[in-house]
Image 1 (tube, helix red, strand yellow):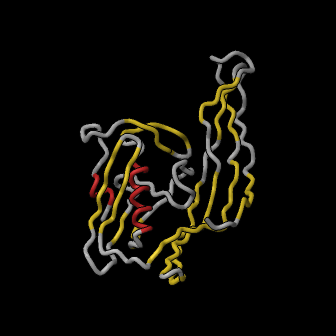
Image 2 (cartoon, rainbow, N blue to C red):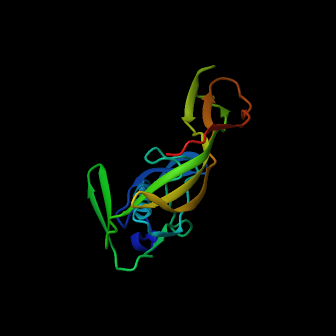
Image 3 (cartoon, helix red, strand yellow):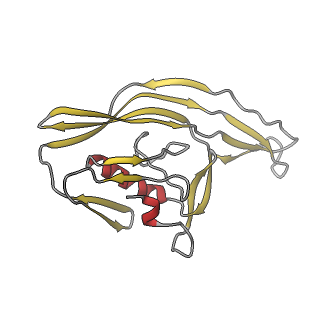
Length: 209
């Protein structure tokens, strides 16, 4: 199943609205903004159903609704989420929406002895720095945040399958690298040269969760 082929191109004519998106390390708006919360929810449902993941991509910046390494961004014609039914029986993918809540259910022959956990390790986090720009419309010395930016992160993620309480398979889901984005601050008064503070890579933790 291809997410993009199933959902289709995100257009206003197709019923999609303008909402927040990430673009080149900045916060922006575009038609179909928020669609990645849908693809991410389906991705996690597929992970816990132990389905095969054929294609998945992380965002350019971390997202607030799932832990790093568990998101799945989509961009029609460029980035897709694709999953495969690698079970021995047919499955059905059902979605249900209520205001503020989206649920995916993957229906098929249940393996009562199987349990799936998602673990991560090698987490790193860094500050991309702050960029100052001149804004002659502001009073001298006054500052205004244009883009709040986001920290950069990287993490290795694994899907661990247990049967009757014993680990039977540990599958690498790859390393998710979130470049992050600089905080952009406008400063009033005379022109201010653009300044980028150096990026500092810092290990945060290596704990699994």
